[in-house]
Image 1 (cartoon, rainbow, N blue to C red):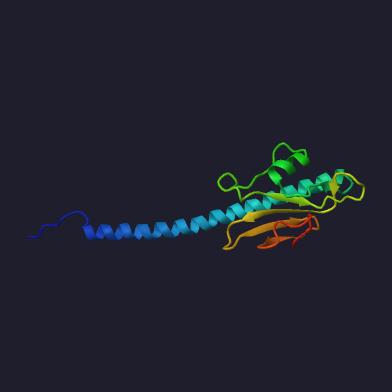
Image 2 (cartoon, rainbow, N blue to C red; image 1 turned 60 degrees about the vertical axis):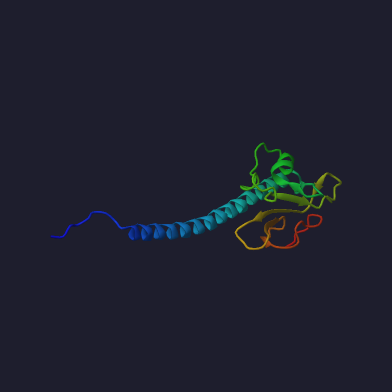
Length: 158
């Protein structure tokens, strides 16, 4: 008479644990890429919000933008220039200071005021292999760049 044992052998348990480990690592790798892509999408949306705020500002100020000859942080200095109390900041700015939205303008308004005729906004994106920035310009151009940041005098590097 045969005696049947109920349970799993050590080899069977090790195989199941190995398969679960492999599946978990695949899921984690793909999830990390999804997170980066989601943060990049958020950055592009935030920069578009700044662009809309700048256009509203220009509509109220004879078509001119806030003048900033040097590169400034958008979520602090530009936010104040636009008279806003809350402005979006980069999702990774707290952990990594290189992720920050930046603003620069030409500062050469023809009427002598502290206003500018052109501007450029940019933020670092992370779902790419090289250091890349998403750039928005006052002329309506937008796109990614790996060089030409920071721009000179608010000129659009695209």
